[in-house]
Image (cartoon, rainbow, N blue to C red; front, top):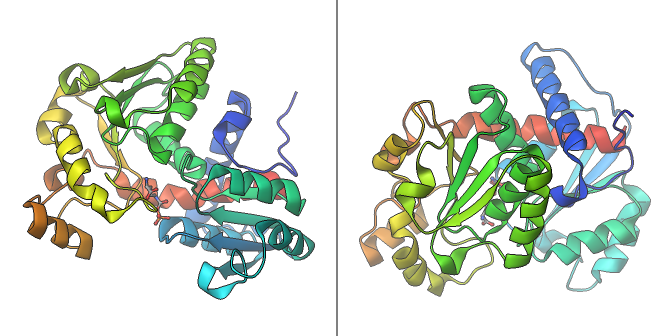
Length: 330
Ligand code: CP
Ligand code: NVA
């Protein structure tokens, strides 16, 4: 039977079958080809979407805006400072209002239950642009980038290093399980994905012929890996006073030249971005001054190396988000 995602929300990858995920990835590759060749693809002309951001963003916001316009849609951007949401109007009422005006809603913010409630109450497709628990649109871009460089990812090894219990690591574990990719969370025991999610993913991975491994051992964890992935050590919404503890816990899990040398000879480096690979940011400079740490989750030489595909990955956010919107709104 063909895949039909029309009218569906995109809240977490656990809700989708491997065939549905494959469909969105193939669609994204087709949209990338059209965009590169300058072929118009405003297939959703006349539709309207709204983007709700309770946390800041560069890639996700711009991807939704550009993809929405390429598809011919009208796009409204709202942040907490420019809407009533949360302060004067409940989420439920906001969802019911927006559902009357828009064909689709993107949400970036806090608990996963918020985006799930938005979908339930608004009556239109809702897309998760990052919650505390998951970041599902990111994973489509990550797998697309990995496939562009390494071909079929089934049976290959993807390692997430560092804060392995965060939204990006959780979502990577799910997508790997769904697509038959061997996933390794390499970090301290304190920063591992929740037990229940690990168990769920292990069952899914077994059905698709892959494994989920949690390890504190960098040498063993990254050995022969095809993709080495990391993310910032303190996520949006976490308190600033957690930096000292995180630096101490996660420094052994920085992606260095030695880590890349221990991986497969064709291994690539991925990062969802933004990244603290130098001191050219206010937070980066502040951390360098306070803790003497000049590069955090990834060494600058790895970030800038040929193995690093982070800017292809950033571009692919747009093509994959376009695929998600098209698949669910067409
Ligand atoms: N990777 C990602 O989601 O980036 P932004 O926070 O800039 O959207
Ligand atoms: N884990 C990060 C991802 C940013 C794209 C955060 O939630 O801040």
